[in-house]
Amino acid sequence: MPRKIIIDTDPGQDDAVAILLALGSPAELDVLGIVAVAGNVGLKQNAQNALKVVELSGVAGVKVYAGSERPMRRTLVTAEYVHGKSGLDGPDLPEPRQQLETQHGVDFIIDTLRREPEKTVTLCALGPLTNLGMAFVKAPDIVPRVQEIVLMGGGLFEGGNTTPAAEFNIYVDPEAADVVFHSGVPITQVPLDVSHFMLGNAERVERFRTLGNRTGVATAEMLEFFERFDEAKYGWDGGPLHDPCVIAYLLKPELFQGKHVNVTIETQSDLTRGMTVVDWWGVTGRVKNVNYLRSGNDTGFFDLLFERLATLA
Image (cartoon, rainbow, N blue to C red; front, side, top):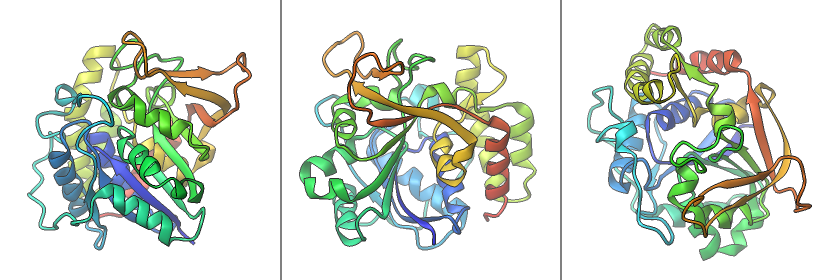
């Protein structure tokens, strides 16, 4: 029976690939809905991008919702300098024919968790954690009903990518992250420590282009645009695919290695705002609240992407 998931996202080229991977894996994953959040760009554009990606996939019946337009307590920080003005620069994707659902995304999350049997819905967070934090504050009764949260964010050994201490998703809304990490829900965290080694080099990008479908071509075009920033920043041969690691972990957890540790979120310091303080060596004695992934098999990861995206439109 497929695992029920809600994808919470701010697409984003790497978010788009994550959504495509999930929609290309119907035997394992039942996507109950996609909820947009403000992050890489503003909420309105992120929601449109989510609709565009769903239409690109050719998969019918996937509902898209708009969630929170700003962080819980902060002014929104965006990343057009990475993702382009549209947030999804690269391919020329048509305006979506599908319309957004009228229900607010946070209320969709709440209602879905109340409706579905307890501990049967996994929340896949690919952007700032605002929607999840707001849902947990607004409806604390749903918290014990969540099966698991698998999220992309943070880092320890690789540091940050937005400040020396903080990764973008956590930096944008550290208060929401603090709510989520203190919720008691089982959490698997995909940090920069993993995603920085999932590099879409030229050979891999070209393989997407030759999958034989429009999804493969569009993915290659997305990655060619998206990766230019990280290639220039880090001097790497290719840019990292962060968010697809969340979906890949659900499909093939054996591709990743990590351990249970305590992770807390820095919300007070201007210098280290949004830092994920990872007690890797267990020196604090704090309760272990996160399955923290440390490494992954990049060859197996990309093979999975090629296999599943090849099945789409």
